[in-house]
Image (cartoon, rainbow, N blue to C red; front, side, top):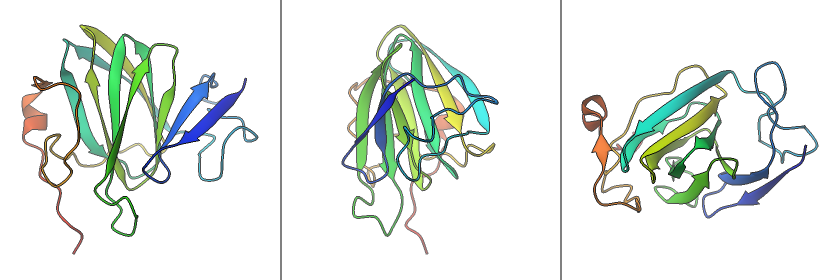
Length: 168
């Protein structure tokens, strides 16, 4: 199984094209396929169900690496750079993901979120850490993320997420 990794405008955020392993006890990426810094094993796997065009989840800070893959429908996946030392600090990148299409690799220190572009979508979220980390407002002006839809559906608990605060 072969994967190709493509850099984005945010350092360390990669678009992965090709076929990955099934996860669990098997490596997610073959060591020969993955560039430096990309985990070959991830600790947590979860399916995120998005019901309704515009259903949005996130932003979630990742204490470890996260890989997002769409397994049903189509989504827009976003990674926002929260690393103060990064040249892309507070910048973001978004990419459309579809079932059996590319994945998005999000490094530690970045936040990630997804929005459904179809009536139903399912996201496979693979994470290097068990704790998804604290959430951030999806519409925080400090991050100025260019979401592709103006009308979104956000769960009440996610509407209460805090704004991004600069490191002390």
